[in-house]
Image (cartoon, rainbow, N blue to C red):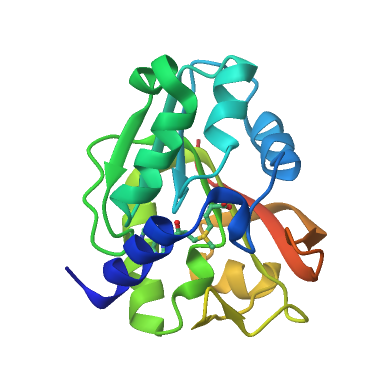
Amino acid sequence: MSDRSAHWENVYLTKGEAEVSWFQNSPATSLDLIRAATPDHGAAIIDIGGGASRLVDALLQDGYRDVSVLDLSANALDAAKKRIGGAASMVDWIVADATTWQPAKTYEVWHDRAAFHFLTDPRDRAAYVERLRSAVAPGGNVIIATFAPDGPEKCSGLPVQRHDSASLAAALGPEFELVETRSETHHTPWDSTQAFQFSRFRRRGA
Ligand SMILES: C[S@@+](CC[C@H](N)C(=O)[O-])C[C@H]1O[C@@H](n2cnc3c(N)ncnc32)[C@H](O)[C@@H]1O
């Protein structure tokens, strides 16, 4: 197991869902941006670094039928499966590192909240974007939420690379066109605040 996996497996083994700073009862901004990306409930959607997030519950509730959740941590995905119960069988659960994963199909929506920002080494960011490019076809959408430039410098005790839409656009390359960007103040379960940005891109060429 890599150091990266060991960190996250331990987090999800030792903490409940509302004991982590990134917990959201309702992932409203993500859901809003996914709805804007595609109203087609048959569209393939993947949540990268989805952890135990409730986004998958919200997507299923909305009627989306082709939902995948990828995370380094099997413990995180087990927690989500347990919460969802029977509907968990409708979801494709993938334990993998987003920088080395080999996607087996393409997705209309790639969503990532607070996973990409852990990639502080430019080589890891390039590897992530290479996977993203093989998983998102022309016309597909990429939604990436990270700590904003005025957000915290660490998350889960690990250093992060903060972003705005311009640094994300530079990382993704000119094939991806910025559609919209939003600022959000996240309130942690202990009511401190964290500045996030959410940016949605569309792959040109469809
Ligand atoms: C801060 S949490 C956010 C979880 C979820 N997206 C949310 O908003 O609640 C970061 C998640 O990214 C996962 N992660 C970190 N690096 C990753 C990588 N290289 N590949 C896949 N998942 C990763 C962690 O296991 C963790 O679940």
